Length: 185
Image (cartoon, rainbow, N blue to C red; front, side):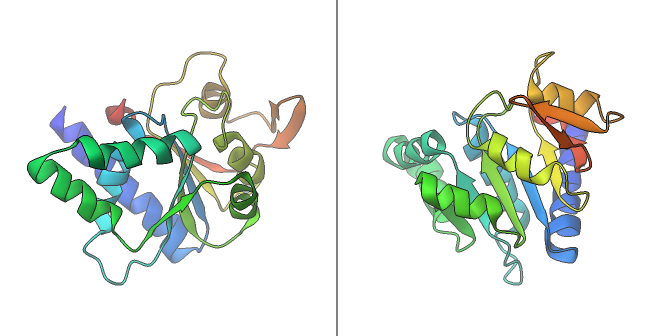
């Protein structure tokens, strides 16, 4: 419902403010590249784009997401194109394309919001962020999509009482803060 979406937008804002702005840590938002990444990026821009004091980087770390973002500007028209281009020129957006830059970003402990694929954490660069962030109780994973039973995203959401989560055959401490915004799915 519209009320649920508004509550989830407020929760997204609160999570980013609490973890990134106040506590100087990271928030990972695993996103599907097609449609979900630009939609969540737009939501974040609507929440913080006009706040001159908001200096938290919004990192897009997904080769496919970055290629698709480039396509949007060429296919959109009128106000939609103008709004999209305005968002993409926002000083906070940082686009990561190379594997080397991604490795640096994963290990960097500075506060940031990371949008990375895949949304269910079955593959992609988001898995590397999870491996880095899951053991840290001060970091946060903010889910904005459906998770199929058995996927890594499902395990993280539903097995919070487990002390470890296995990722690619290796156990990782399960301490990260987890939030799930269902209305975006």
